[in-house]
Amino acid sequence: DAGITQSPRHKVTETGTPVTLRCHQTENHRYMYWYRQDPGHGLRLIHYSYGVKDTDKGEVSDGYSVSRSKTEDFLLTLESATSSQTSVYFCAIKDRNRTYEQYFGPGTRLTVT
Amino acid sequence: KQEVTQIPAALSVPEGENLVLNCSFTDSAIYNLQWFRQDPGKGLTSLLLIQSSQREQTSGRLNASLDKSSGRSTLYIAASQPGDSATYLCAVTHNQAGTALIFGKGTTLSVSS
Picture 1 (cartoon, rainbow over the protein chains, first blue to last red):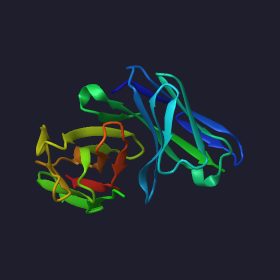
Picture 2 (picture 1 turned 90 degrees about the vertical axis):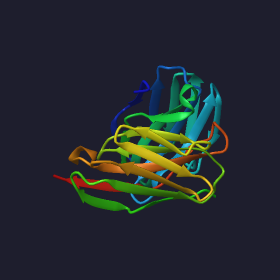
Picture 3 (picture 1 turned 30 degrees about the vertical axis):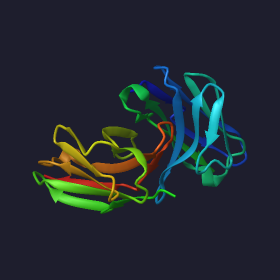
Picture 4 (picture 1 turned 90 degrees about the horizontal axis):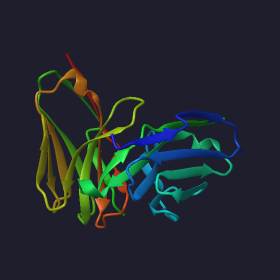
């Protein structure tokens, strides 16, 4: 357990509404990641952060934005949710004290109707 | 572009059998390789991490090997148990410590008693 929590754990929202998912870590890790997991596609990187206010895009970043104003929190925002963003979202950290092993949060199941 | 493939996609074995899960990747310039376990509806649990300079890692009944030059890794599970039933995911990071994981689509293992 790398001290990663995600909130909310489940959310149902309507198309066109904004949604923010939160990832919180308690161990001061520099690197944080957002992935989405979909049947047939596996896990794919959305955005990642390498420090406070330092973020970069991943493979499937369109329609998503992120922010990291504190080391412990990494926020993922869907500005205007679409049905194609129905997915399970996982946050992860990279532990440089353990040879950069990645640990994952419990996930958020998002349904966009 | 790095691609990670896991074969087979699904595997069913009787309890007590030793088994091997396969993972291949197209670009040998990896930093490390990580094996995960995912139970249905749950998050990812890290099982083993192999650095690019290593050949294998062991944890209990699990042994993971890495042949970087041929782009292959195997996860060996000894004396399988029904509790080993889950999806096993292989993922690699590229040749910089901060980069994200690139995942295979997983092998779903079912161990019958």
